[in-house]
Image 1 (cartoon, rainbow, N blue to C red):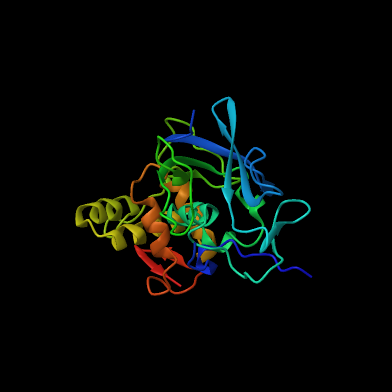
Image 2: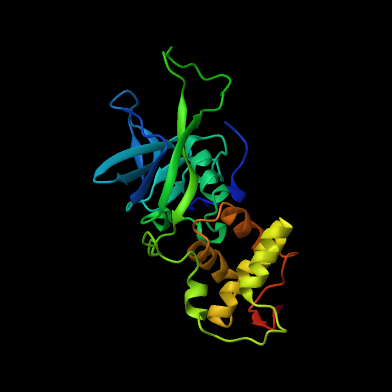
Length: 264
């Protein structure tokens, strides 16, 4: 039985009119054999991403490696190993694209071997120069080879997009009207203090405090999606998501919040 390739960049191996600078939604994500408009037969195993840009659609292909190593599953949801390769090459276009997702803050533990988990993702995409690949001859072009990657995640699949003018954090709207003793620090005061300190770890702690004040209790696995919901407009959002995944930052939850302190 063929083994499905892991899509997490942690499991990659080292090796080998354009869309640009726009917000998109991933309508469909499947693996397919792309023949480069008949130039390559039978084709190259590729990730096919159908993106919605306002009312238009565009399809982007990302090569995943050699057809000697990989084939798409029958339903296109997985990439199956048929040769000696056991991991996706980090320098393949598909590897670069998938790594950009994690770098932008997509939860690594949600990226297993089923590419359809990306359907419904809303993100900002940009073009970056393609890496130089020694030994591969390319036809001369008047433009630079580029790869479309994700630079920022707007909302995760299944997450409702926050309407314009809505409060920055859902936690604040839920907690509104709750009185706290004056001697105890409020979340709002902690937020201001963290902002003044400029310490990203302080800001991450406060982000969790806001979520806990609204939810009461939360597990570490639930934090990324909740941080995306409450910090969409914050430029440090992606960095904070990465911090809360660090076991040295906080031990595995669940945690509770009381009197300005996080306890687990």
